[in-house]
Amino acid sequence: MAKRIDVGGLNAYYGGHKAIEDISMTVEPRSVTAFIGPSGCGKSTFLRTLNRMHEVTPGGRVEGKVLLDDEDLYGHGVDPVSVRRTIGMVFQRPNPFPTMSIYDNVAAGLRLNGRVRKSELDTIVEKSLKGANLWKEVKDRLNKPGAGLSGGQQQRLCIARAIAVEPQVLLMDEPCSALDPISTLAIEDLMGDLKERFTIVIVTHNMQQAARVSDRTAFFNLAGVGQPGKLVEIDETARIFSNPSVQATEDYISGRFG
Amino acid sequence: MDISPTSATSPPPRPTRAATRAGDRIFLALSRGSGVLLLVIMAAIAVFLTVRAANAISEDEGNFLTTFAWDPNSAHPTFGIAVLAFGTVVSSVIAMAIAVPIAVGIALFVSHYAPRRLASPLAFVIDLLAAVPSIVYGLWGALFLVPHLSGVYSWLDDYFGWTGVFSYSGGPSRSIFTISILLAIMILPIVTSVSREVFLQAPKTQEEAALALGATRWEVIRMSVLPFGRSGVISASMLGLGRALGETMAVATVLSPGFVINASLLEPGGGTFAQNIASSFKESGELGKDALIASGLVLFALTLLVNGAARMIISRRKEYTA
Image: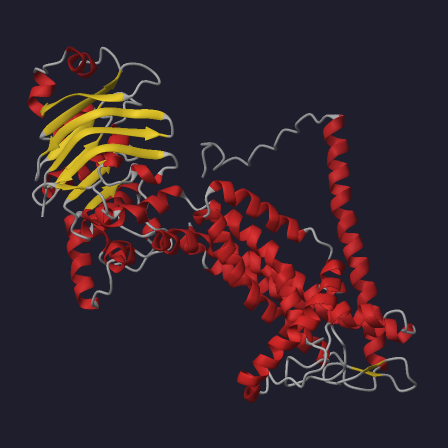
């Protein structure tokens, strides 16, 4: 269920502005890869190039290669819609569909892919909610609106919605930044379970979080305001936080800048 | 919540009187006065209308609700609103049925499909349509729409004439259906621009949620934009319906009135409340004017009913839009 991502020479633009420059890296399957770096370094932009969400922004443009197990996502004739069905995404702010019930939120992606039998749908919804550690809290009110849940529950609902379609990769863009510490802990625990089945990439501003949940960490930086963001280094998380090979990484992690 | 520990035993202290300034007092008096004045004017209008209407209805020798005639000026005044109510409701409902889907389509195109270079001029043209005076629509309807619709109506008669609703004998098409089409064109801009505003406010986060699940453009609209815009579209439609119900000059210019209810919507005849008031006011005597006021009161009640229904539909969906 999980695939490897190989990125080669990737540039992304907003209109005439180059947001990230020449990024190459490998994201290992069945592991958590964390992106850290100061604001504006392009880590969120880079994350959004991985499922072709960047080009949805007006003026958004991408150059370079993103290989998902040797298949180029930006290749000729590749449909961005099918890319996004294979690579799920969880956003900074929980965004369940407000007019849909909890059940319908989880089922939303499956219904896009065509008609699914009700019994099968029930099974997948239950499995996904269990996978997102939310089943026990909502099993008695599946037909209530998803917007009635707490922030942390809503975010886990969004994770359930994303994993219901069995993606190869799960991208998470600062998934805990709008949540309280207890909800954050719940989601961090969940990531440990989810990496058994999915390739997970998480953008975070919280370095402790990166240290806690990730197997590998990538540090991004930018030379100055208006300059494109670049990948400084990517390595085992333990190594990045104890003995990074680049001085800038150590400065950032020890709080000397950023 | 009780935050004062002493108030449980002792009576609450009298609120201290804040010092007031002359400016505040004058402004308060002015705004309160305006509010009261509005209520007084409304009450005066209501009393006037009700008294005159009651007078007319008591003189009516026919049945005010069911009589198919409008003859309040004769020695035996007989008049009823059945034909007017039918014409008003049917023409407005058909106008809605034609205009709302087209308006929603245009609004979605402008807000979510059209490139920005095309979207702004298009939105401007639509707003411009709303600024055309209704008498101009009426003239256009009478001079262009009426002669050109005969062919369409003959075609409708050929294929759907058997239903009775679309039978057509070939006269000038100054019928209920023609004014429905004209009303549809007239309410199109208001419904479109209100819907467009609502669709533009659909939260980006919802659209991204749908996109990230692998939704196509249409699916994004169906999952996030339409549910968000639903109550807005209902309000927009009701604004349009309100305009269609009360439209006067365009209808009076195009319709060939008659106090009959035709099974066929394509044949001339029928009338609407507003059109009847405009057409018969000048030739009416005292009682005739009172009768028209009574019919106006019914139109007012109808509009009120429509607005109330719209509010109910919108508030019923509140739970989901929290």
